[in-house]
Length: 569
Image: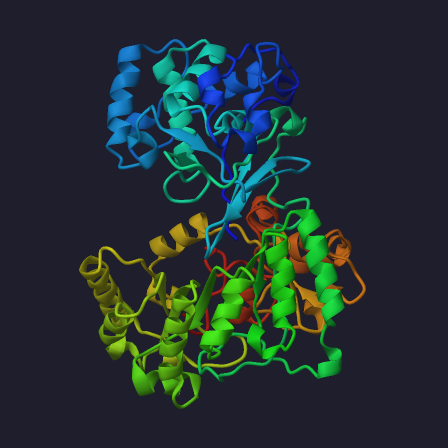
């Protein structure tokens, strides 16, 4: 999970100054709204309520607005003219952000299935949107503004509150509120719920005073995980040519027992975990999968299921009845080519039937398609066929090399990737009303120095051991789903250790904060950026291991790294 950090520097001593704020009482006619009973605390603020730390908001409103356009590099405060704010608002609106295009009268709330969690150094606001876990690290002043969206207040009203307490004009306050909405993915991520004529099932309400933290230095690593990768089995129904999984074989007696898996799910719920990705082998290859899925659904934990199993109508209805909302199925090419890639005759027909069965039962389906050099010529036909199926969305990606199988011959060349991109761009235009997700990254051997430097600078934070851990079928804990599941790669054992025992262990720490001594003989050892690079951004040992055959060395995109020895994507 990629967790973006919202930049904001505030002296710690300012954050400890708490003052009282007068907030208007909710009018009686609005308190009668049918959904108010779901969010009682959000409607009980009075003029005497200690609600907002003024210094928080002052600091928040003096944050520099950052947009792509140079004209937006301005400081918003109470001294800037109203005319300037109106001009800025108009120009920012043209950036096509829903946060700036929505009317001031729009009422927003926070979906009830989202979570807000207080860590020692930050507040985390996070949730699911079917196929993805999203999360934002927030400072208290941002949490305060977030709490004002109670399903009753409009964007304009929240902007007025922010303007009043920061002593700036209302346009300035509303711009900053909209900027926060934009930063939190309004219209892209389900961080907010638009309140219209229909009542929401539930809304998230919280007291911002519960989220006052004295230490505002944002930490990349969380106090506890928000997601897990739980591998229930190593068995699969296919034998894919491009598989990147470890595929270690486990005897039945070595697998985690059902009771222990349920205990781990219980603990995960208590920690605030909202997603458990059931990776490894196929979840449906395990006989007790229904019991495990039911426990997750009972806690509101989203099961991440990717399968190549045939799902009958009765099984599809059973999955829907226990609360499964979505599944991902593999479909790599039309007809016989698909069967060849997964090494199972008749697979493509069974998967098409599976998609219909799941959709008929009310389960949303996404397809995941892996494109190899051999199947590339069928890409246009593949997309056209998938568009005839009742799919929620499709995902298309070129094959890449894992640690265990595959060869360079299955990878797309630079010219083939150019054709791939052109095809996918055309298909997105051809089917504008369908969700088509695709990606295609250049291999480092095909990139120039400028591209590689940009990749290194913009690489995502590593989530391994920072926001999640991986539990193998036998209970061994690793940091990455592609990791070997034995020897030095193991950092815990869930057969007898709790999630938090592993999370706080020295064995795990050496993976997310490897000591400098491990890098002796490499450019990392004497590098002045070691702390911010290796411990800050995260050391992706997997990419290093793939390219250099060792765990501790510069990231392949680092200008100081040794030249790669082979293609891997």
